Length: 341
Image 1 (tube, rainbow, N blue to C red):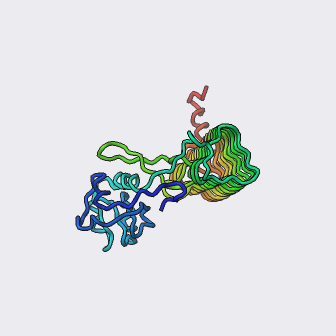
Image 2: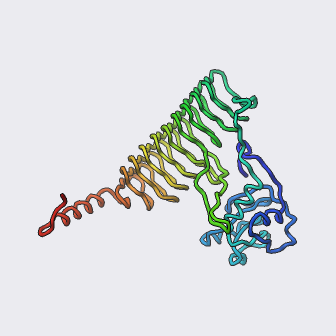
Image 3: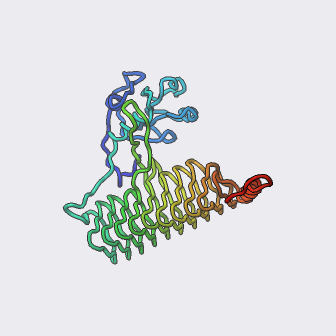
């Protein structure tokens, strides 16, 4: 269930209605009267939820669906267990997205009438600069400073002794104590999720949160996206430079550092004490082990074992990269071959 501090519940809706929002059809029309209250990912969907299956590699996960409804392709229907209500569609993810928008809506506060909403809670010693906007249900801890133009969305919790820089925007987030978020940073906007459907490419709702633990620093103009359904999490004392992008559902460990222009793609898990050089990039759904070091401008496409140093394009262990670079240099400048200018 999406966190009600950040998402408004618009349900319930019948399965007939949800099917009508897309190209889906009920495998058994007699089940159309069932009420659905929320969307859920495949691994946690239960009674009253609707989920989807689009990746055949996850067919085994259908076995746990009992009492839930599921959008899936007709050719996968035979794999579903008894008690799972099937909505058949050629575009399961797009159909699920339409259902999600019917059942859940992000809470908003434009601040046009009351910049600091009366339902927000500010502890003693909070310092607000001009043009700060704070939404309903937000909580700001003692000793925290908000610079001019800061926007704190509905339901956001900011801990004690934090520093939020000018024009930073924070939504859908739970933030610990002694966190520094520099000017222009954006925390909690939707991660990049899109899928092709019969009407073209559509955005997929992002229904998760961002969690920044104690002592985290987020540099100027950096972005940390909220999770697609779960949480994007940055561990204690991790330091992020300016112009860094952390995508949805990423888990960064404690005491990590990321230099400018680093990009970490969705659902990647990074262990404690990892260091990223400037302009390093990591592909999605990877694991970077604790204590690893990723060189500047490296492009990581495979899991990195703990404690290793990788660099290059594609990234590989440092010693291997050095050997290959030396070999290529020798070949390029060898006898009978004009060397590099």
